[in-house]
Length: 66
Image 1: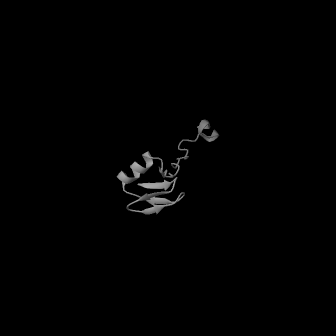
Image 2: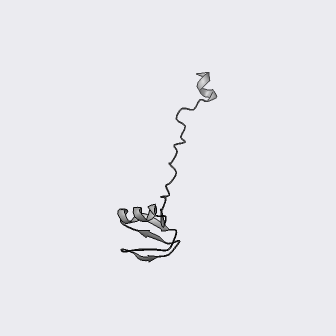
Image 3: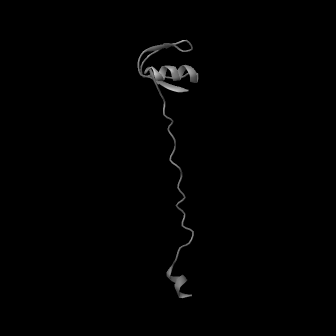
């Protein structure tokens, strides 16, 4: 789980972790430290979905004349 350090702490797999740094920790360890207020989960930045702006049926004056 990707996490960001809020408060200086120590994890056995990562050693000393300083505030502002991001780490990829095992889920169980990360969740314990999040519950205790030392870490916060990094939010995934998603892309905006592409919008289909194509116009398939266009009415023109020529269509009305027929």
